Length: 245
Image 1: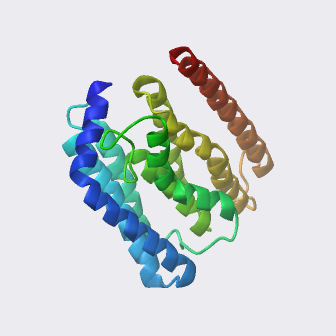
Image 2: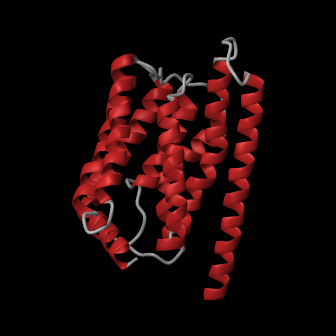
């Protein structure tokens, strides 16, 4: 646990100016996507997301998290997601046009990188040993919000990677004492259900086994199971906090 928090502190202390710049760029691009959604703005947002994922892979994991075990594997994970954004940029899979759906939920997720540090401060952490806007979980939640608000055609591969990352984030609550990661884990349950539901419905006219209706029911069941698992885990964690207090 000490190594984990020390690497976060080193990362934040060295990169906080860059994190402020990234946060400003993300805010500007979001506003442009809402107000002036030109093709240039969409290309800029996809390029920014690719760069952000490569930043997490190269700077966060390969430089500042090198003392951790498995840092190389996690760096590869984020590099692949950066590659997915590059691929999307080339084939123009995601239009990044406003869907007009789930606006409130999407806005909450897009604001989560700013909420993360506030939660960390509320839990007693101090700079630089705290969560910050440009960390893996923050970027993952922001990506989910972006996909909800601006992707009519969801990149299902990227959604699966984000689902996997949410499960990784949940484990950190126990091992490293980061309860704010529940924000990521809990947000992925309804978000990923929406992603997969839209994917199933977009292919409803194609003959599949099982049928689209069966797949939709299975998605609901899976989301309920995952949601119950997260709830039980949260209650158990709250009990641990009560014992500590």
